[in-house]
Image 1 (cartoon, rainbow, N blue to C red):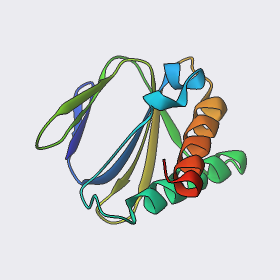
Image 2 (cartoon, rainbow, N blue to C red; image 1 turned 180 degrees about the horizontal axis):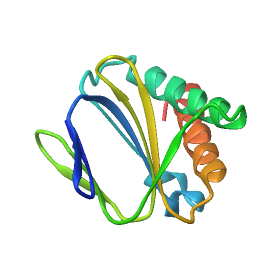
Image 3 (tube, rainbow, N blue to C red; image 1 turned 45 degrees about the vertical axis):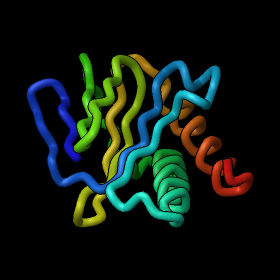
Length: 124
């Protein structure tokens, strides 16, 4: 799996949460992608979303601002994000976040956290 941010390509990715801006109105647009794709994956995504949300509240999360299309490429598909946020974990466990300029980071993180919490609790 790899992420393309404008002219930069990141290839050591294990898990990604794609949070489009339109997910602020309807959470069903949020996507999760992982290499492991097993029964515990939803818990990994919940932990990622929760960690990002709490770190942001404590001013510990560095969120890079981007302009332009973000692409997430897997072996079978390419997902494109034109407006929103991307959260990902690299192969060494490091956590990263990017958001399109001008968007409300806190609201996007809240949407991701709520979505993943419901997924774990309701098994949606």
